[in-house]
Image (cartoon, rainbow, N blue to C red):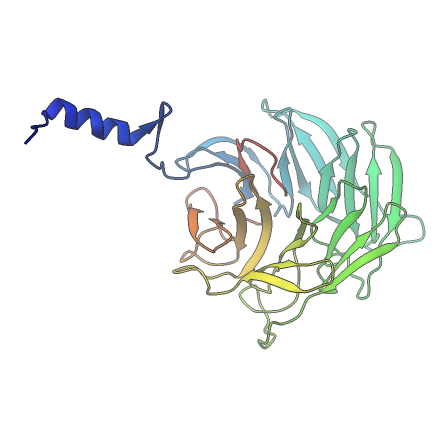
Length: 317
């Protein structure tokens, strides 16, 4: 019988724990987060501590950290600003009424484009504009809206890699894809998923908030008060969803921002959900929860705009 020394056993154990110089031990997932709520824009470290903040007495529906480290957010219904880490506003846009329109205007979505221009979706004006660095409109298209409302014409909108625009029409309960000239090329109408329509932020309806185009050509939808996330094909077939009570111990209320990480995980914003629920959830495609943000000291019940930071690789959002 061969005796094995304690040193040999320890070495074997060490070999099991390390392969190629890398530990196989799984570290808990943690993210830095950019978000707006409680009258301020904040950056939280991996432990949920505020490391940067600036006043923002407005409920943002969109926000992003740009590659240069500046932050793009809106400070009131019509104003979008770019702020640097020193809290200096280095760019600003204010949306005004288009010619012939006399109602209110609200901005709910914006995006810095690869060419340096900024796309802005205007409710009330029912249009998408692109403005350059000097804030001059260089392109615009009219949006189709069945139930016009300066507050509900749109929620999030994004320009796709092909130049088209994917637009969530909250009041219509419809997602429309427009080509660069404004022609509708794809439509998906939300449904009640077999449940009764109810009012309030904790209710159920078809008021869609977010949609992003996946690499496979399908569309991932943040259902707003549909209380779910769905993946639909170009033909409009729902092939996957995570619903109101599908995650143990978590309930979806107003599903807002979506992000698909390089590893395929989905980060979901869960707004108006109350202190029993997290404000953000990261799940795998098989609906396993791998990370949550539940920080009721730094954030509140209106965290509609947020972004996870420091992700290596391409994030779809």
